[in-house]
Amino acid sequence: MKPKRIAILVDNYFEQAEFEEPMDAFKDAGIEVVVVAAKTKQLQGLNHVDKGDTFQADILLADVSSDEFDALVLPGGVVNSDSLRMVEPARQWVKDFLDSGRLVAAICHAPWLLVSADVVQGRKITSFFTIQDDVDNAGGEWVDQQVVVDGNLITSRKPDDIPAFNQAILRTLAPDAVNEEEEEDEDDSDERLLSLGYDKQRDEISESDKRDILGDEDADDEENLHPSDVTPADEKDGTQ
Image (cartoon, rainbow, N blue to C red; front, top):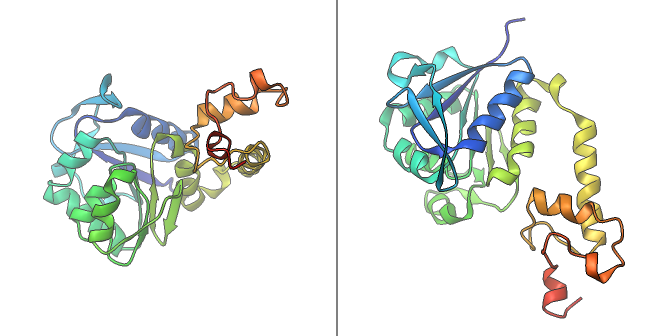
């Protein structure tokens, strides 16, 4: 069977984790990954606002057809996403993939391109919270979830959601590569957070915070109860 082929489409100054971690996950699953750049093959990653590593794209957008790929993945980053949404061929790619039933996956600020491509009408979408109004104004239904699957469109909010984002993509393109045991462990850890009085969404607990909290073996010891410095909201406001 011919291996699946994913295009990761970026302009410059993308969020590096949202580019690199999905790419590694796809390659590990035996999927061919092609980095497609909007304007220049010389690429600069960002770790939020700080410069990260440099990368070399495989091909320019103008030199390749969307028909050559099974899926389109869009990393975020404010600068990258704001620039990419103004690239007409990039907007056309999004339309081509969605209209043909092929997968499009966008994380963080990348749904800006979906808005500019006029494809969010009637879709359920998540993104970084600051572009919620853009999604709503374009006729989409914005929800605050780590990953949202709406037909052949997958969206996520931020770098902390990358594991769930990757799993959702792999479940479609390479289901044999999905680690169901890892997903069950993730569910169990979220339940344990709730048992300790935390709510992952309400208390804005990152993956590193969660690891710190669940790594505490003595949750009854007040001095060690919140090793990550994250205190449940109900405890802070006295409603516990």
